[in-house]
Amino acid sequence: MKIVDAQIHIWSSGKPSGLHRKVASFTAEEALAEMDVAGVDAALIHPPSSWDPNSNALALAAAQTYPDRFAVMGQFPVNRPENRGLIHGWRNQPGMMGLRWALLSPEEQVWLRDGTLDWLWPAAEREGLVVSTMGGLFLPEFRRIAEAHPRLKLVLDHCGLVRTAQDAGAFAHLDELVALAKLPNVAVKATGAPHYSTQPYPYRNLHDGLQRIFDAFGPHRMFWGTDITRMPCSYRQCVTFFTEELPWLKGRDLELVMGRALCAWIDWPLRFD
Image 1: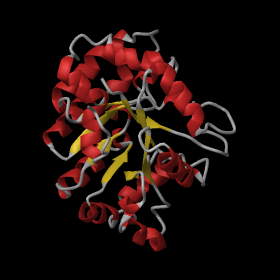
Image 2: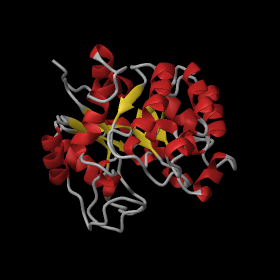
Image 3: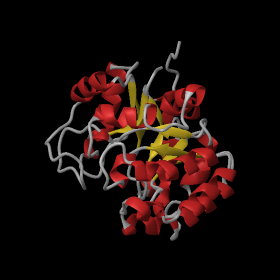
Image 4: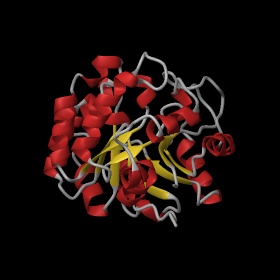
């Protein structure tokens, strides 16, 4: 079974935010070494431009050097009108699969309501680009975007849960989240799951909530991944948490969640034979 991580970061400068490893750099080669130990075949890089302004170019260089191991969900300063033209032909960059803005801060989330991002959604829809974001932080706005642009493929990052909470608190908006599964243009990245539990591996208090997400979105719209540089466990445990500890995730469904479905959603032409 080929395993594809739906989210990692690499960087060459800056001060990593939040719980990410406090190291000056994390290179493609370091990521590959950890992936090899964990049994991960490929990974989708999300450039952490918030702390490394050069991370988009770094990610593209990694994808072009290791095309069978990496691809990129890139970004640019989306609030600057002069950058709007960058979206045209975005996927012509070798290794580039789509767009991702976390929109973590309240200041960035204001853009969802003040018109700053109104141009983005129809432009990405016309270009056939997938857009990934931390929609669990603003589910009502995310739903409005998804409903208004039914041909725009959208991805909810980090299980679509309450990123600032753990245990039961992380699932506080679960009903609202799973209701989004009725929209066929919405998928969920099951990345960062171990972070949501204060319990030790195998994080049994997450199992039921993850199953509800899986039951709603199905194996074609739920993508395993890690965000490994801020995980509280080993890379291998991030893998086995899904491949060995979730009894309801087996067979073809497991293969889809662990990589096939992500590649189909973003049109990443990895070989699975």
